[in-house]
Length: 210
Image 1 (cartoon, rainbow, N blue to C red):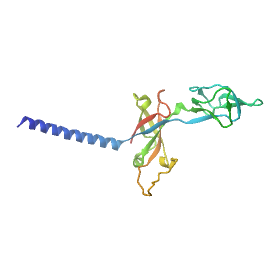
Image 2: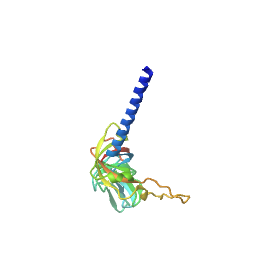
Image 3: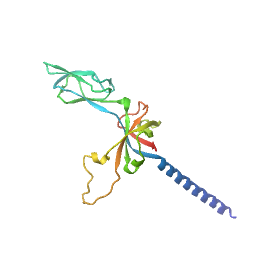
Image 4: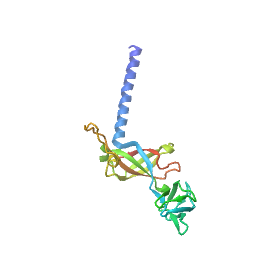
């Protein structure tokens, strides 16, 4: 038999084998996991707000300061009355806009704090995958800000409405015709022991085990 024909047959068999193996792998992944890169790191946040108008005579925090609930972080005075500025939860100051001796108004946001000890992922999952999704399923998480690690997590909450419901502008066609668009539902996923490199707002990729 011609050597070229033999080599051609071997290559053909290998190609078929590779295609079958690749197809089997894709099928296994689709049947056993839900994957998406439409995910972001989140944390519960709370603004630090002035409740009084006047001069910010004291300001004790900056970005990165750890605080606890009801910590007094500043004082606002109008010359006759001094009113404390307090935090409203345990967390870390992730943004501070205030400066000592500046004029502030009642209701003005002076800083933003976040609960960095209980961060989580909000992943937008396609509606067709919801039938297989359950609270308590384990999740592998990769965060762009710490790409060398895979974190474990758990499905905590499954949303009761699609992301489009909360859009500022509803999805409408200018021509009056309807185009079906795959909808996504937000899913909250806990992160077990995230590293210091993981921050709110970072992109993430999740793989949920079914």
